[in-house]
Structures are given as structure tokens and as C-alpha cells.
Image (cartoon, rainbow, N blue to C red):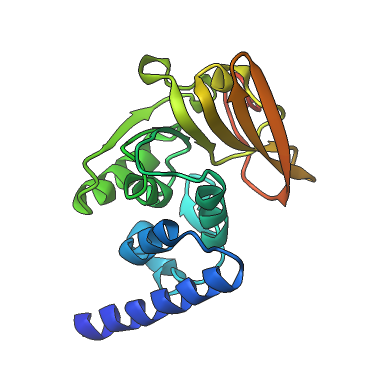
Length: 218
């Protein structure tokens, strides 16, 4: 029975890969990271049969695991080369964390909800992602101790782009973050050029609220 389930998951994962390619994901490293990472390991048992749908799924604490295409779009947009030190704001299920671990040198990930991060930590360790450091805390403050970062990924939408996160970017570093309220959000790519910041609007998105000192109130 286990082999039948594994085989079914492998088939579903291949179909998801085809969907990502059809939607414009061409970065071979990103596609390989998806191929290597079992999304069904990061979702609750009750929705595991939907793990390879290109759709967000609930993971508890009012949070979701994002649509796979959104993860792939994030990662492709950042043009990662494998040498980066990256900050992830919102560990969530840990799925994107493990994808990142296959694409960069170091991942530092912050999660506000301790129960979520505990579950994510167990899966991340089980999959052998040894270049990941986790912390429970307010992601809008960042993780200054290990800054500057070559890339920062924010997995929830705040009212503005936190200056605290911009300040923790390395020169040439990129920050990708959704900004907006419940009705309308836009995805922004911020690139640091010395003391200046270039901002590019990548289009409409829909994420859960970013809670914290430099985000929304609880």
C-alpha cells in the first residue's frame, strides 16, 4: 500500500512540474528543487491527497502553504545562484524553506507561530536540510545578527515595505514582499543599490496578513 501511495504521489508531482513549466517557470534549478521536495510531507493528513494541486492549502494557526506556482515565481524572480545567504520571513509549513535550502548556501527563517515552526522543524530535519537556521519571533524586525542578506523573502502581506528589512539587505540584495490590505495586494521586488532602493511592481497577489511591529497589528 505504501508503495502504491508513493507511486501516486510521484505521478502527481510530475504533473505539478508540467503545470509549473506551462505557467512560465523555466529556471532549471527551481524546477529541480520542486522535483526533489515532497510537498505532501508539509501538509496535514486531511489535505495530503491535494498536496500536488497548484493551490494553497491550510496548515493550521490560520495560515496556509502557498500555491506552488507562487513559490516557484518567488524563487525564479530572485535569480538565485547557489552562493546566497537568505532570510525567509514566515517559515510556515517549511516547504519553501527546504526549496531554498536546495538553491542557496544558507537559509535563516523566522516564524511567529511556535507550534507551526515546531512541526516545520521536524520535517526540515527529516529531509536533511542542514543549512537552515530557525527562530520563533517577529519577522518584520528581521534577524539582524546574521545580516546582511543577499535575498529576503516575505510570505505574508504587510501595509508597507518594512525599512527594517530593507536595511538588512546586502548591496545588490533583493527583497520580495507582498504589500496591501485584505482587498488588494501587490508583489514588490526591492533591490538595494548602495543607500538607494529600486522597487518593481510584479503584479497582484493574495497572501495572509503580515503580523508584527512593522506589519499589521494582531
